[in-house]
Image (cartoon, rainbow, N blue to C red):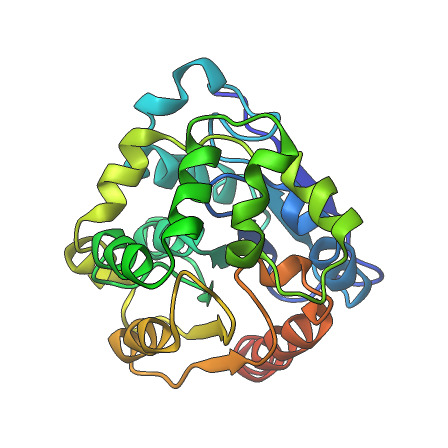
Length: 266
């Protein structure tokens, strides 16, 4: 299957491990290309972001709703197998579950989990969201059922972005969102402990956003406890951390952790 892979070549001698970024639901590789890919490339990393099947410019859009999380894991494994060396897998939200399920299969050096779906799965998170803020849940449904009008997606603004993101930027990003596989969402509704257990023991960084309307701080802490680490929660940031004005603080934290965890041990 033809998969979209966005790549930024490193400046100078490449660092020890290539980075492979995996997006979350409703978006594609483009969310990493805005800031993260060029930033890490400037620091000498070989930086790649793939669009999972049915997303972005990857094949499979016509069969999107048949795609499972296991299919997404196969996509990551296929791309990782073509890289020059063992990668660090960096996943956001749904992509964090995909990364954990793919990590051993890809012989990953480490994983970075940004605003991850918690180990208990999406079921409890959706119930919590429905109780806390029903309009946001309605907005997610608008995305899932393919609302094309940006105005129809305004209810997800506070779910995805903090108030510091400009309205022009929000409109531009929302125009690029898309439907997510219904099968994958059902897969994610179940507890994920069994499928992500193999990733325990790998060096893992867990990052969350204090203003994430979907995954609360306690959910981020649950993901961190599962891996026996302490999470880093960034204040004044919402779910799409890689597109927030404070994205560079997140990238800098990831880079520092990579330097300490991966580069120093190579």
